[in-house]
Length: 412
Image (cartoon, rainbow, N blue to C red; front, side, top):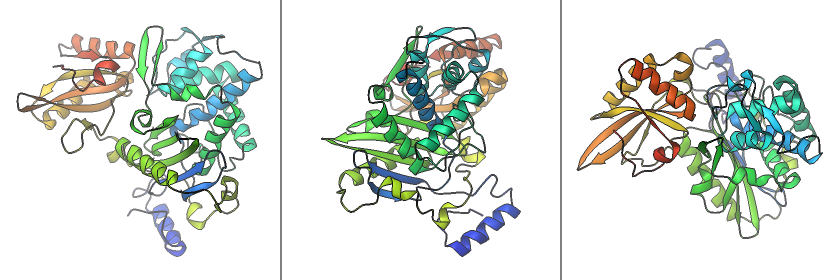
């Protein structure tokens, strides 16, 4: 049984009761439709909102607060962008999305912030937290304290990266408050969120924020994904002198997240801003439908689906991030899926758990071929993955982000 947030109060109570008694059917919360809010960045008026106070898992939107606290420290003179930072073994061991920093590697705080914001690197987020807070847990306390000061009354943080934690929750309205705080309090640092790639010590990764290249006027801010959260996005865009901030929590996939955000922003720009409630007004009343615990947006089956890119029905629906490893080109999707499964069995568990499977369709002389890949690696881990497969006499080729992102690139 699927439990939805838009039920009438009586039915909602019944549905919640069934979910509690049938936990296998609705583990960890109720299934839910995406929630959203669109705000005028200058006036703070809410142009549209759908359950903006509903509790949700922030995923990597968490890194917006990690950045806010870091910027606060830098602006206060207690830390510097160019100060040296030594990556700890704890930071280097973060999974699954990471830049690939090695334990003991020396970088700057600015480089760590770049990797965290542009590539959504969890190892960088922990490195920033440890540099400023000593430990990630103490830094997370500071994050929650800052959230309260900013009026984010329903948000709590437990880590700096956004990795799953049942007590780390937020709302669309609270994330809009944080985005506006970043824009207004640290305009000099906002360009961190506009970058389309990051290069550190010879390693490069593209931005994970596809809205930057797909929506006119977009110039930030952050994406997030976990199975529980679904596909989250906070986006800011300017048309003329007007800036809007949109928040979408719980998209079903990357394509849905991007198209829904584009629709929200388009509608927002078409509306005036007179006689509308303010963002501050939203916290004064929490509807019955927003009282539920955070949902599990995507169940395990939905979350583990292999991505398919380049098919004629949905071209460009996904964006392959990071370094990839390709294991061959096949005549069917099924064969490619089998190749991915075989490759994952041959990889060390630590590497297999980091990567997202992907199948890329390439058409050659009228025939379609399907390349089997694992993506989302850093450069070092892509090399390690291929070495592990070579050692088992299997084919593997590491592909850079530039090659993965080139629709005209050819590989076996």
